[in-house]
Length: 68
Image (cartoon, rainbow, N blue to C red; front, top):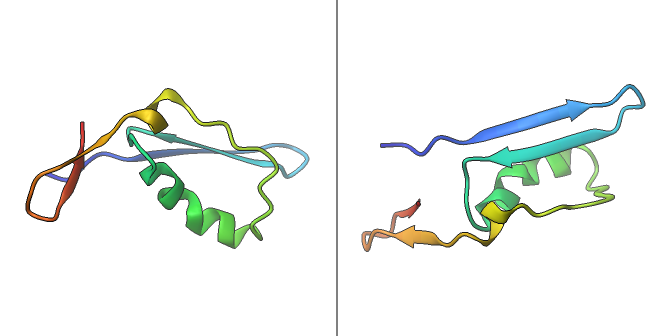
């Protein structure tokens, strides 16, 4: 079963973009937002890591990684 991923994207009246990754533990959150960072010119002013970032991903032993 595919893991649910959620990106909450907010654009302020001044054009500042904020992205919050939900339902994705571990460093995979950085990979999920890379396409947005690239599209926006890689101009990251601030990165705040949530507690989900520090949760480990679980490997199934088949080369597939699932997060718990």
